[in-house]
Image (cartoon, rainbow, N blue to C red; front, side, top):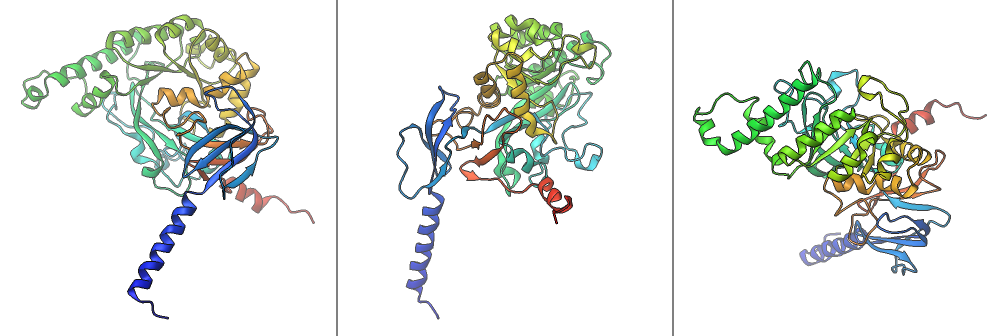
Length: 421
């Protein structure tokens, strides 16, 4: 049957209308124990999601007409988890160079202009295991050298392009004071000297770009692209996450931040508990693990599992991570949170450490990290305490989309596990 032009226009308008209604359909998660992070837990609470945003949170909230209702009675509801220090999407197989895009050659250990997210693999098989266990956001960060480069905040959305998944870029600059050798120096004093030299030259470059272009400036420490990229750090626009473990080195990092007026966070911080008062006074957060109980090198001799709990008791903002540069076991962030609770951190602080604290440091707390009206609907429904090993994510929403689906691991299990006769 042939349609007239008017009929075709009417049909198109009807389809558009239906599509709009479907995309804006509300989802109501009802009857659960809601942990908004921004406030106390809500028993028998309801979270309403409309068009990808949280539109209501609380007890006694009315369910919108026509909403999809998820019965969360006996379940727990939290913001999506944020694992801040991963190489997810940048590193597929560590032993295969063709699948690793998390480190740049740089210029004598400095790769400040390296934008790691430009190599993000949106089709990596490692996204699914992470999001299926409640990790809705990650930091996709570079590795290596004195200044590794720039990292991004990425949502673990399935079936999207890298541009669709990236929430903020650049979100952070990565530097390392953990190893003089990795920074292509021979001693810690030389490492700090080298970093100060690079920052001083970045300041000089910014004030004399025209003279530099005309060849009227002395040779500078590194390539102009890296010096230009460091301007966003010197201006305070982008924070620096500094990998460092020894207490003395953390104090040196705090002095560096004061001298150059940098916004910094500590990555690793095995001995951070020793300098908790200084970190708290400087309002510098620490991103650390909660499963490491013994030192792995001379720089981590003061490592202890109570690190995260001691830091929080000392007034330091703490973010938990699986480990710097992790790609395969990103989902284990909740086990680290559970361990942190076992070793002295409060449960509420542990939840904040895997939701709001990283969101605040990376500059995305206006959109994620808590269950509040107006924020993006990164929400997880759990069948129990999310920090208990046996608990599973029942529903995972990212920007209002229910995103759970079989991972490659699930499909391999289905294929090779013997079937019962």
